[in-house]
Every structure is written in C-alpha cells, then in structure tokens.
Image (cartoon, rainbow, N blue to C red):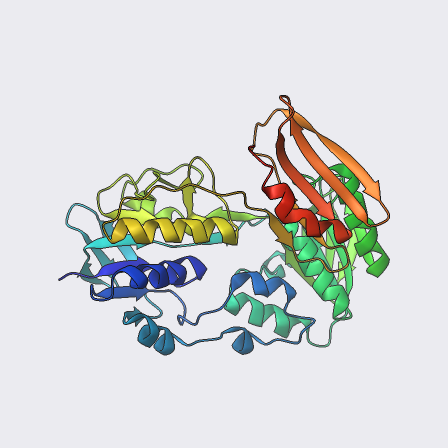
Length: 378
C-alpha cells in the first residue's frame, strides 16, 4: 500500500498527521521536510527572546520522537523537485516515490524588500527555528535593532526585544501599527504602549538602502533620513510557497487553490496551512490551520467533511498592550464603533445592517473576546 505523503513538518503538517492518525492508525504515513523535522510551535518564535529560549529549547520533540508518536516515517533534509499527479508520485532527492494521497504543507516565505546597498544581505527574517537561531546569534553583544514592518509580527518582536533589553526602531510606510487590522484608537494605544517601552517609530517611510558601517548597519529611508542599527529584522509579511505546485500545473493564485475538502486542482493532491488558499483567503494563523487539519483528516480517512471556519479571534503577543482582534472579512461594508475606557479600547465593527462583523479589544477588555465572538454572524 502506498503511503499518505505529507510534505512539510511545520505546525500544519504535524497537526494534520496527528488528527489523521486519530482516524486511521494503519495506513502508511511518510512525512518529508527540508529541515531536521523537529517539532516546535512557530508562534513562539516572536516571544522567545525575553525568555532566553534557544532554538533547541523551542524544539520540544525530535523527528525520531515524532515518527514514533505518529507511527510514521519521516525523512529530514529532503529535496522535492517534482510532482507527477497523473502517476501519483513525487521526485525526492532525485528518486521517485509513489503516494496514495499527497498533502502540501509547504508553509510560506518572508517577503523580501528590494533593498540596495552592500548590507542588504545582512537583513534578517525569522520564519523557522534555523532563522531564530541565526537571529539570536546575531544579537549577541548588540543593543539596537531596526524592524521593517509595524504589522503583527513586527510589533510582537518589538515587544519581546524591548523586554529583553534592546533598543528598537520600527519603520513602516503606513501611519500607525497594525493599520490593516485595528481601528485607529486601538493602534494608538499599542503605539503609545510600545513607545513608552522605548520603540522609536518611523511612519510614512520605508527602507531603500542598507549599508555596512564600522559599527553596524545604516538604513537610508525613502524620506531621506538615515537610521543606524546593529541588526535589521524584516517583518513585512509572508508569501505562500507555491513554486512546487506551480511546476505541477496546480491552480495557483495568492496560494495553492483548494476547495472545501482542501483538495487541489489535481486528484489525490491536497494543501493546507500558510501555502493554501481556501475559500479565497490565505490565513497565516493557527486557528484556521487547525480547522483545515481537522477537516482534511476526515476527508483523507474517507469521511465526508467540508471546511467551515468558526469565528477566529487573533491574540496578539504584545504584553505591553494586551490585544485581541477579530477583523471583519475583506470587503465588509460597515464602520468601527469605538469606546475608550480606563481599561483600554473596545472596538466593534458593525455592518450596514447593524450586525457585529468584527472587533478589536485592548487591555482588560480582551476578556470579552468569547462573548463578542458569539455575537458575530447573529
């Protein structure tokens, strides 16, 4: 019997394997990964520095331990060069491997800015354990970090770096942090809280050039100003890994397009997680991934199932300003109704029909998350 093959051992691949093994304990399972296959929780990468966590400490289980837990074969450091959907096979390290079903849990790559200068190659991103280990090593003996991007990941890293004792500058072309997710009042509270910890904000501009200096790196910004730092971290977003799927002529848009059974445009091939575009959206968060994994596990075990997302609030890891956001669906017509109290900000996105479509909560108002989540769609 040919195995179910999962390409990728990030949170998506391993979560699917665990959910599927609850339903099918006998079908052979083979996981392939470009790294060493250690299990870790990727969301922990952006708040591990203050806890003095090493990459080894974040990895809670080895590939060997995961293989035993899942009754699976795991191949680390695998290079997958081709998918032959017609023959139900893939090329791994130059050899053909047959599958019964194939799941792409390929993840996403950090978006790279087209920076000029001899220091552009020194700009770092943190997207996996290896990246984190290199970033942590680069910080040794350093004091000042410039972050490109005031989005969720940029702000989480800023909070963690500040708590660990570093100076932080954040550069963003927008006018406020988390501008695409939050109403202005919640952004302002986050901006003030991180500012009080020591963040220097540079809004309305972006990095154009990074040059090496005797003491570190110098960023030239689009407004003509310059900024010196020891380390530069890019956190401007992710792009789904689609090259392998595209080479197999699978349907690609912003991600690998899947239907409500997580099936790709070729029989026997599925995708989930950061690389997948389900219901027209690529959602690089844990809760959508978990829902996709549970649905796909049922589909692969022969049970009828369709992807249906619950309300999925996002908890932002910025202890300086506790924050939960459940943004309205893109294109939703309505407006933010915001109340500021001594306890924080309570923002409700109300649709044109008067229905609650999203919310943003800061401070102690974050405790209202579940109650508001139950009102969405009612």
